Image 1 (cartoon, helix red, strand yellow):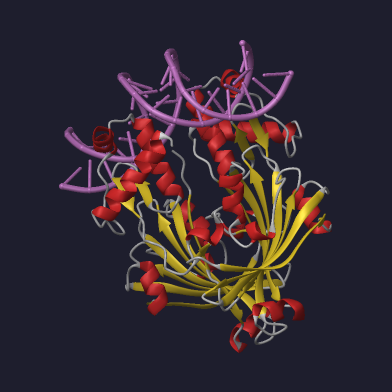
Image 2 (cartoon, rainbow over the protein chains, first blue to last red):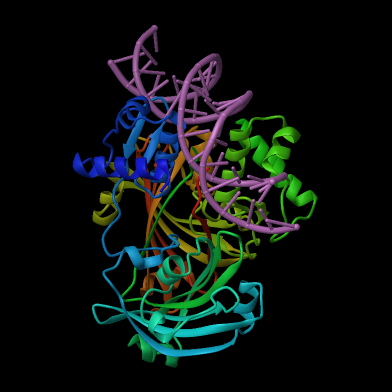
Length: 232
Length: 232
DNA sequence: TAGTGGTCTAGACCACGGG
DNA sequence: CCGTGGTCTAGACCACTAG
């Protein structure tokens, strides 16, 4: 673990321990340097991390302050971790597990038309379906996959099992009406609203390994994003 | 303008001029240092900016590469600039311009129940309505506002007219059905899908100055987000 | 005007990728 | 093994905030 990640964790713990809330001030950069015995840029990197995660904001000439905390039950749209860290363990029902080439819109997002694992899953929270997923994983990059893995967290498997680092993603979203087939899975009616997301994930070396179509149940899913214009 | 912003612009221009596309490699950090006559951390800051904007990605031990470019016609969900930079000039119809206190959900987002400018607007692109906005601006922070300003870009006015820097935002989103009244404005039918966004904006000093409810027309709006786990 | 964050540099050393 | 990006430091100076 990198030094600035450690320091970021420590600062986060400090915020929790001291019960700091919106607008409360952190110790100065100089104090933090002394406190954690690291250089200025290490502190700055740590604070940048916390800024990117929507936890603090910096005000030049004044200090570093705590941001309002996100509301419960909302999923992050931008985290590459997806909803994994926000929701209680979702359950997963694998509807189809097979191998095939990705069809047109997806293969373009993948920048490849090679053979893929195709996985169709319905994910539930407290027994309520919140998203229907159709995912394609490139076999040249994810060489092994099973129904059992698909019943858990595929991304955890890629990170911890395959030791690959997921680095960035492209998402294209729109709102539309559900088809009859989708509605059946999501326990809604044909024509009800949904959010459709085309989501492509890339490894640290820039190769796309997964592209998915996600259809969210409008009653069982809500989203948040905390953004910040900020650099070290 | 800061040095690293200038360098970021130059690198971006270089990418355009050399017509670099997905996967193409930029010069090495060392080369860029020589080329632009700046230190290493300035180059790193510039590249961090471009990374945050979804333009490039870094691969340790290998190089800096160009990311796939976003598709046309999609609005950024995370930019604090909103759709301003993505769409051709939207036209704006001011439906209501008044002064009042924000009602319950909004006043909590604003962290204040002071008197606000209330502005209800319908924004169109090519004559097609794509979003219905209800915005509250705190009068203590935005001391003057007019119907004429509301017909243009309010954020440009705050930035350039009032010289205030917009720094971060909180967004809470869900999909739902349109009410009859909303449908009338958006030229859709009651019960049609929509994206509802509660959006709160903060200045660089951390004070919330605007909180809005946005209702997007599902036929005339689509969104993208290019995220990246990255630090300098 | 003191204090705080922001920018920038030079340089040492580390960690990873790929031939 | 070499080249590349990544981390970290020490320190100089700038820019902004707030009393």
